[in-house]
Image 1 (tube, rainbow, N blue to C red):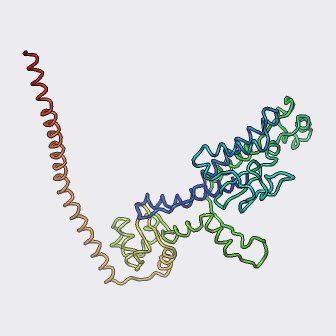
Image 2 (image 1 turned 60 degrees about the horizontal axis):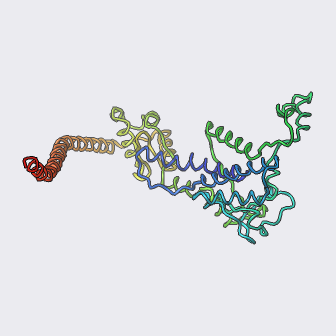
Image 3 (image 1 turned 180 degrees about the vertical axis):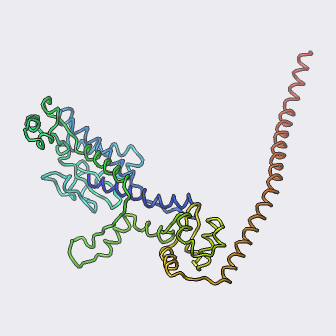
Length: 385
């Protein structure tokens, strides 16, 4: 259960931070070569299928239907996973005498065997984003039922204490014989509720790393920390922040905040032109900023540099401003020239396309006529004969 939560939260982080960041660059029209992001969905699907099979076998055990044993449950899980191309890559049978890098003691049950001594019918392996995990299925069927005996449920429901009464189920008095309440289904439902709550919040992420496997103070295991950094997607996040632009502001906000840094003659320009002039006037390197469709993107530290310039009220050289103004005018003339040439070229291009399509249609009609003419002559000759 805890590993399913880790997978879902990791996938939530990837989708809402890494993938959303790349999609923002694409929407804003910035050049960006996409990173290969980890996908935890196959693992989540595999664990979901395990839970469904577990519920089926646990319920059959409570009702004494069929032969629901831990070994049969394990075989069924492996068989179901082998039928799906994605699930069979992340869930497979455990190799006898081998164990993964991690184990889950809570799911193994009491009196469990060592994971290194598991047979093929006593467990399986799931490849999580944090590494392989060997699961021993001993005792899972019994532990998946969170239902109390009907008599105990009836006592709780009949309690005079409101808190104790709220812990019971309303149908406890009507229950007869062994009943079943799935722990895995309730955990999955609570996890989905948690993700729904997170989706309504403004999230900030803090990554925690274990410095060593012994949980000892003043001891740093570099390989262990590096392994965690790679597994949790931090490398991709750092690469996006390094190659991309972590600071971004809407055009309206930039113009409103830094309007006073340029003389009034620049204020009648459009937002994009004003921002471009602002970046050139204060020597912001071209590699440290980019204009999107609706936002200004800046490398780390550049926004604070502009804020400092605004606070200090740095005056600009008149000659430099005149050069920037002349550059803007030349660029506008160039754009106007491109627009005129495009307007002159488009009618010619459309006429060429129309003529080409007409020629192709005429050629097809000519070929069809040349093929049909002999047959028509033969048919006419047969009719006249």
